[in-house]
Length: 379
Image 1 (cartoon, helix red, strand yellow):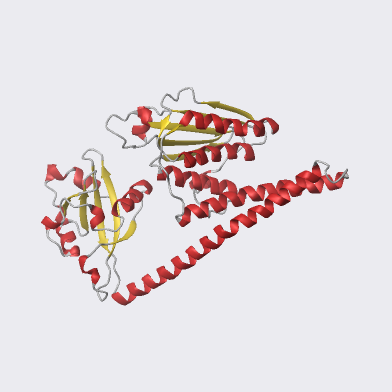
Image 2 (image 1 turned 30 degrees about the horizontal axis):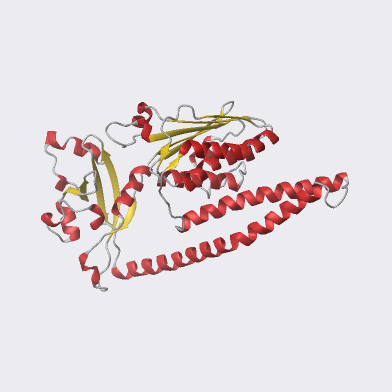
């Protein structure tokens, strides 16, 4: 429900929030409730003095997290209301369908809330189904993650022994033996990469990843990653260029291990999926116009040195429009049969970057290649 235009003209035409059929919250930038209409008061059975000035998350479970998701993805969400009377098990919980719009002029968020609670019996069934589904999913994640070590260990052995045989440890090979061993070695390494990325994505989805924020030197991290991949690029004759000369602010206060995973994921895409093209990685600070155009809140000054802008280009991978529309959907079945590790990598990048309050875009076109662009705050 797009309601922004109503509120922008509220002062001019005297628009009354109570004319809208849904519950309306007006949320300040710090998450506090600035105003509500009578429908909200009816739904929560509360008076205006007990709700104004309190945090939205006091009335909607994980309220600010849900709002950020709605605003970032331009979607709606169903959330559980926090009701004082829920201590009584005989009273059904209330669920709200939420939509939201940000007014950047007034620095407020307008939230529309619709009561979508079913009858008590139906709701109880939904809760039971949810608990059962969550238990199955949690069990699946635990099993996969606990099994990942032994699965990857087997693949490492296959790749290692096949490489050793190719290097002549078992004697001279015939041409056919070399051909088959090369296939075994290549396929085992490819499968190992795909599974590593898939397991890492499952770990993210399971909620096991905990971020450890601390200060580190970003340029030193970039240099160490460059050294790791130099030999791969030389062996595969990949033309690679790295430019971070415009990066003037090197102090970063994010999770160093996660930032390293983000940058290494980009380098993995280059080293594994480029065969005859050129790859470039440019790291600097985004222009103010770039931040404004993409609606970064930051501070009023939009200090560009508080962000890094990463542009990663690979010329010999091209995605069609349908693939681009689903680039961050791990379950999308690509007609081009893209490696699952590549799709998992894009999903990991999206998750990590958005968790750091950044954003990522992918552009692709014939004769140009693919550009992966993302912005991260430095703290």
